Structures are given as C-alpha cells and as structure tokens.
Amino acid sequence: MSLRKFVHLLDDVSEWVGKGFSWVIISLIALTCFEVFTRRLLGKPTIWTLELSMYLFCACCMLALGYTEFHKGHVNVDILFNYLPPKWQAICNVFSFFLFGGLFSLILTIYGSFLFYNSVTLWERSPSAFNAPVWPSKFSLAIGFLFLFLQMFSNVIKDIYFLAKGEKL
Image (cartoon, rainbow, N blue to C red; front, side, top):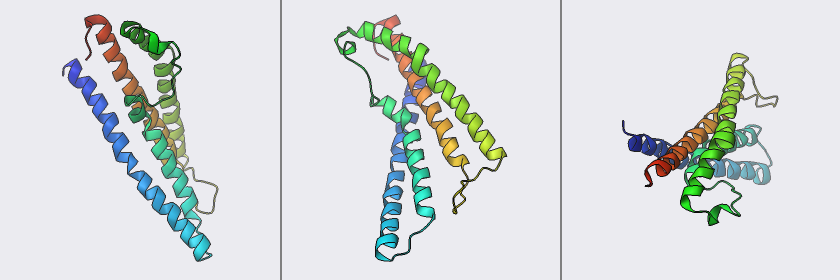
C-alpha cells in the first residue's frame, strides 16, 4: 500500500465514523422528545432515557474526535501560526504532534483501554435504578482517542511528506 493510499484510508475512516455517528444525534433528539412528552404531558417520567441519552452523547462526542481533527475543527491557538509560511506551519505541526497531541491521544487511548477492560471484567454497572453497564462509554473513550490519534498521525505524515518533497500528499 502506498503512503498516499494509507493516508487517504485514515482520512476516510475519520470521515466515515464522524458522519456515521452524527446520525446518533437523531436518536438523541428522539429520546429527549420522548422524555419531555412522558414527563410533562403524561406526568410519568422514565428512568432510562436520561442515562441512555448521556451514553449516546458521550459516544457522539468521543467518536467525533477524529472527524473534527480531519476537518480542523478543534480549538487552536493560531495568533502567529497563520502568519507563518507553510513550511514553518508543517514544522510546528510535526513538533506539536510528537510533544503534545500524539502523545496525549496515545496515552488516553491506552488509559481508556484499561478503563474499558476493567469495566468489562468487573461487570461494572451504573449506580442508578436503570443499572446500565458502564463499559460502552469507556469503550467510546478508548476508541474515540484512537481515532483522534490515527487522524493526527495521518496529518503528521502529510506534513512530513510536505517538508521532504515540497508538495502536498
């Protein structure tokens, strides 16, 4: 597999996952409307809708990390960055990946994997009356940061290629 195909594969995964999980927001809206209907109009609130909504919201936020990175939607401090020439921007991106972003997302992927593993092995459940399993939210934490790491890795490959060849990948 060529470097170009590998980078585009990582970009496509980020795009696909981001667009796929954006549809979860529809179910989140439906759950919220259902809860408002049962609570306000019928006077019979449900136990499970709030907790399920929180889990779905967690999944949406975490699994959209790579998608947001692909579309340059994360918060940046770019007071000087935008005024730098493209070569210096690429150098800053590579430097920040190895010192901050890549390391941060890799550590949180590993830590989230341990949290997920412990949650599954201990059969961890929420302390609410709904008593839902906790592992899905911990799984989305680990996978979300893995997707973020992969997208950042794709971006750093593009920047290194640009620095080496002088053209965009």
